[in-house]
Image (cartoon, helix red, strand yellow):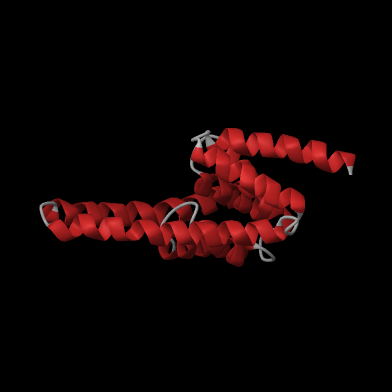
Length: 173
């Protein structure tokens, strides 16, 4: 029961303190690794949640909850992940409905974009360092990934191809 309560409060906290699914990965890494999952399990979970259809953050929550406490843990982590954003969105929607014609609302939303982009870059860098270090192969895969993003290749295809290339590359070494 103590683990379930810890899971619930961890995911409540992560979802109250982060602005989006991908941006929450760094905070979740800090909160979950060593407490609920190992570092290797976390990196694996991030990869799987990125490939599978649906919300990455919710899949990551369910994986960590399941790893920590089985099916009840997965359900508790999912509930802790869904509850804060749902309540916040309901409140914000009510407020924005009353303020929808104000010019500063659009400016505020546009101001969030660069901050979220920087958070995602820092999170990716941390995962990149922990997931095998900075090697020639890692730099090459990062360059290919950026090129794929530039040409608007779907993210899931990039991740699947990177995994296949990694299997081929590391099985030959």
